[in-house]
Image (cartoon, rainbow, N blue to C red; front, side, top):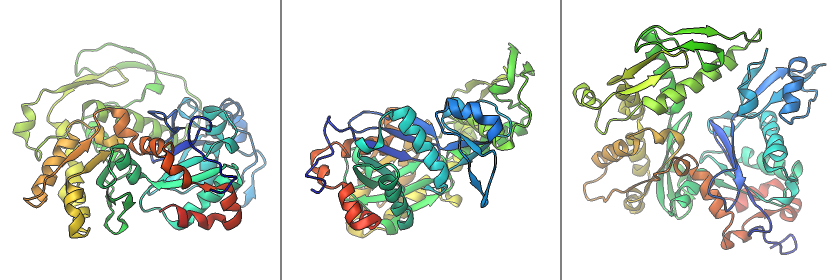
Length: 430
């Protein structure tokens, strides 16, 4: 290997694993069981004068920022990570650096990387090889730009990028698998054969956690339920079930942006759906749903009630065959693969992604797939029991991969980058 025969594994040199997604960026050291940090995939962008303190607290340099080719005199400030983003600030807009599973706003993404090295890793970037996950439909220009960024700005000693579906399969001990990943903005089915993604058969739909959040919000608003988030509430009184809430509102800064308020409301919806929403093992039927005990939920205002049939009806949208639901997604993907690999894909269906943690999700997917699969197929679903393993499947796969001996010859070293440039990523990272 170049770079003086140096190997980038083992305990001496801690390789870092980055797993970017629409909900969050997971980052930590290879060989660990879970990420060291999970950083929201959004950045608060505020005018310089109002966010000086926040930016300093968040460990981000206050700098002049070019905006629409005009350099603003005061400069924008960037607020990163849950602790800082969740604080109400005047004129702070919430922006994401992700689009369609790929890094889209590179300026914002760099701010998050700067924060990660300074506050999470707390070590110089040139000491740590970096493994990145990427979505299966990532484009060449993005891969090359990331390679260039890591070597040119962060001076990493070695770099590698792997499809997140391959890593999720790897985390579950599989080199060949159909990876069904249900995350924030979409659900995808990705066939992996002997460690390689069969790109022609990747299928995705926009039915993910954000879509479900929207369904929940519309349902609750139609019922007249007050969805005031916790940050607005100063005090509240206990009330009987279904009684109107009694609470006082906090004094908040002026000019709170709509994007920040919607971001905080989305957090409330995510808590509601993970606490109450459930997937029926069979297509929604009111009689079946009414026989299952209801679930109690209390909103930040103090209002509380039991949720019965509606919590199953809301989740049904994720399996809606008219909108390419999860079961149809998976069978369509397998059907686009060569006949000789279909049996092995059906025999190893890996479920990953935070949205797949909805109670009943794996069981329903298993039922829907078994109805669509050929009768002679032996169907096997692999869904990690722990929420950490399911939410961070790709990161855990990266953690394992970056620490095994045989992988150490595969890194793109800084010397190789200097000799051949960013195009190395297409040659060395399948």
